[in-house]
Image (tube, rainbow, N blue to C red; front, side, top):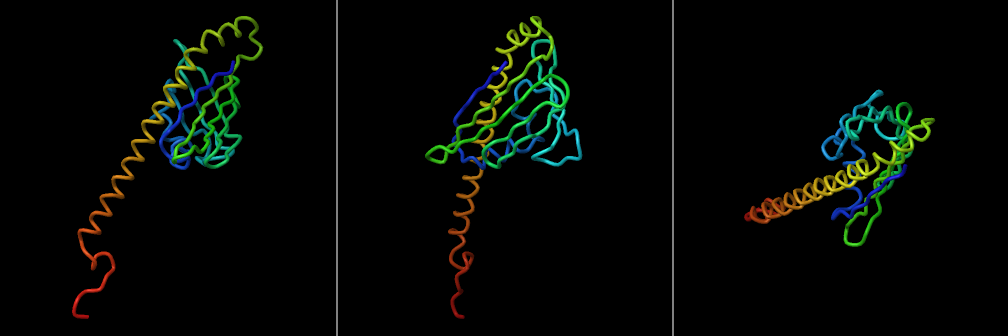
Length: 176
């Protein structure tokens, strides 16, 4: 079963990448995820492994995943090593005006389970799709909030420098 969702975020791709490339922050914005923990030596990026579980109905599904593609600022993809067969991908694309289109895709299946597996995949798809949509909405909220905080800090810093006068900004004092 393949599901996906996309959203446009009012921030550049590097601001979005900062969150999605940091697995320690996934539980802060990923809807339905009940576990996301490091399963190796803690390296990030290509080859990193994580134990991931998502609640679908009364079950938690997932398993051990490995990052198989990492194109900084653009794509991050994983595939399952153990557990439910799955492949996922974050895709970031720069848009005009300093914006980013973010796409989150997940393909999953219950290998060798016949008609009952097929039925379970289709029954669970609306829940999984909803988790992806909510995850993107929460990611958008978090990235845009951090972007606003950075901009406010820059404005505050600029005001402080201009209020302190030329000597604080690197000018010379009188009488030298």
